[in-house]
Amino acid sequence: MNDISPAAYIGEEVRLGAGVRIGPGAVLLGPCTVEDGVWIGPGAQLGAPPEVSSLPQNAAWAGDLRHAGVRIRAGAVIREGAVIHQGTHRPTTVGARSWVLNRAYLAHDVQLGEDATVSAGVSIGGHCSIGDRVNIGMNAVVHQRRVIAPGAMIGMGTPVTRDVPPFAKVYGTPPRLTGVNAVGVERAGHDRAVAATLLRVYAAGDALATARALPDELAGLADAVAWWQAQGELRPVLMDVPEPA
Image 1 (tube, rainbow, N blue to C red):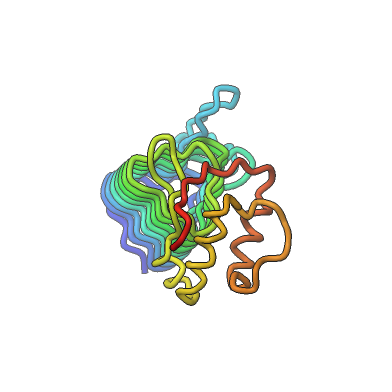
Image 2: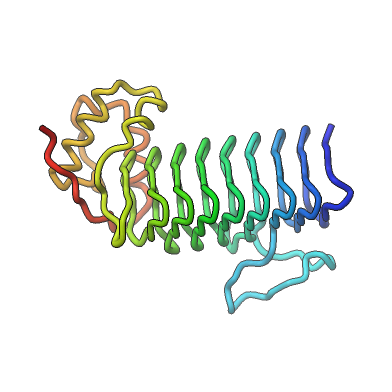
């Protein structure tokens, strides 16, 4: 059974799963799919047209349905005032169990993985691909078409203008890869030694951006690295990792 405030607006071609909760003042415009167990806070806005000047700014609330839609996967949380726009060639997607916190913005065609956190005030430009378990700190800004690989952590206020490798820890202006998200490595089920090996790889200036055999110690990260390498031409963030003692 769903719990939808009578003060929310649910437009045409918005499909809701079971156990969905939607707060007052939220606006959902189609095409939009919200899977089971999703929580959408007051004032959240999902499904406005892409901010692309060459595309029609259609009035979906009047039945003018265009563009590629929005998809919110099962168990995701969309907090107050978050804004998620329609995709142009693929649905803008929030992965299962991910959190999009208050005032965050996901532009058209963004792909956010599972169990990720987009903190308050974060802005993510169009066509970005963000992997599972990524954590983006408050008020960070992600440039359009950038890639953030699984397990990465982005510091508060960081302008992400280049691509971020798996489980990297990135912050500063300009942004630098300064270490490894060791807590994220362990929470993903990997041994602590994996983080130490990955730190040595990054300290040597290797962003793992080209396909090749991984060190044996990193075999457990093969899926995350393969996802990263499959994203096309990458421009990895600059490295500033001290050599491990």
